[in-house]
Image (tube, rainbow, N blue to C red):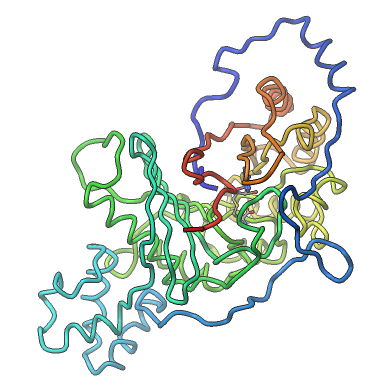
Length: 422
Ligand code: SAH
């Protein structure tokens, strides 16, 4: 996704007030609105032996990049640098350069002995992401980076400046095995999991770009800026790469100089609904924000829209989301891409509101997002009035609902558009 973040205003405030007579027509229109079924358009969805959309949990490619300082917990870094024959305290110096000054260049590290410095840095901070391409929006407040990994795999991250915060949408896997038919990333399947350091390096490189003044948009104040919010809405299913994800999250929240010193609540992990991993996450005692990509409140449709629904049904995913709130006190986000005539019917808004309310109040909010078209797809975003109706119905059921603003559409950097081609 990318879009990382939420527009502060509600759709309705755009001044779209309805004539009371509209509601009758809406109801009639509602009754005759077609039900479009999900189908792959312009490409073939991979199927398993039973004819169902193929789900990939195992990585076809098992190679991982060379070990990097960021792959180790702070306490294990001394031993890692000691393998190179230098005293353990060098690990702290290297950590400071990397996590606080965002550099992996030995020329910047004059506190390390010149003798053997290049070799030490090459061992501890090997290059992980090679920048292949950078696209930005007109005013430069959104940048999409295309990175090549050590084995040639391509991934993307999207950096967005908002008033008062800077959000980075990061990838957690090269490709994705979840095969959702409306998402560009899933179409090519999974290549491999990213290492923890590959995940972290996306943030370090974004911080480096910010420090060099490369992110446009209006800066607030004169103090140095850095990424404040992370959304795991880039390529991949983060909970399918659980251990590396969790190590990366721990490094993000570890205080400087051993980590990035970020706040867990500003980190959003978005999932298709891998229930056992959601339960595990709830027990970690790291209060990251959880987002569940629901997109349909009924199994009939969700089975087709989110293939992993064949394993964990809507109610199980919602129960796990509520349990996450109970364990962490963090309000869960429900992601809902509004697709014209497919999942945007008023009855679905009502059913979603009911299912959420059945599990309690105040634990959840909904983020509808207009579908971002992917190449070759004939699916389109819901119309304005239908979007408004959907939101109104959820709000009148007492569910806080915020339309997500999609950034980066013009550079294919919006949710579901990351295909990583150069
Ligand atoms: N695998 C994770 C995270 C990556 S996708 C997940 O599914 O949650 C991040 C978000 O973008 C998800 O909510 C996903 O459903 C949504 N998304 C995917 N394709 C989209 C599209 N074409 N338009 C709008 N949102 C999309």
